[in-house]
Amino acid sequence: MAKKSASSSPAAIHIGISDKDRAAIAGGLSRLLADTYTLYLTTHNFHWNVTGPMFNSLHAMFMTQYTELWNAVDPIAERIRALGHAAPGSYAQFEKLSSLKDVPATPPKAMEMVALLAQGHEAVARTAREVFPVADDADDQPTADLLTQRMDIHEKTAWMLRALLED
Ligand SMILES: [Fe+2]
Image 1 (cartoon, protein in one colour):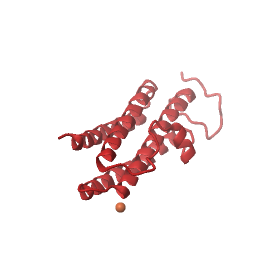
Image 2: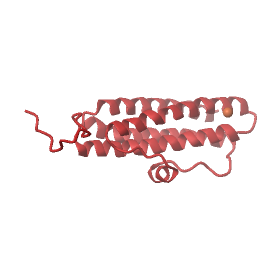
Image 3: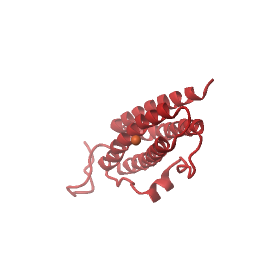
Image 4: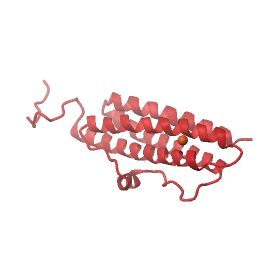
């Protein structure tokens, strides 16, 4: 028989994941949110500031990429909320939590932008991969599914960016 919860609050969460596990997963997702938001802002900045003979194609490609990243932050933040925790959403919090460096103050050359974004997508994939076992061990399938989707898109985008850097 299932153990009766110590809390009788109507707002208590009983989804079959312990308080401790929910906190650990929310912490990991907060890092993923900070990484994703930082990469979103970097990509949008590069969309604005890219120059050179590749302008048209990079300006358009960066728009596709920042739009995908912008759409990704919402499900990550809302999963944190569903686990009972507050979603970080300030520049100060994101700076503390992100594994990515802030956007360069001076716009880099076009191909340096491509290299920085490739490294950024790889970094976000690594963060998602680090968080995965925490969710998997806690039987948190929705988070594991979200992380799997994010790893897939970041690894695919990193490949496309790396391909541009090859002769
Ligand atoms: Fe634009």
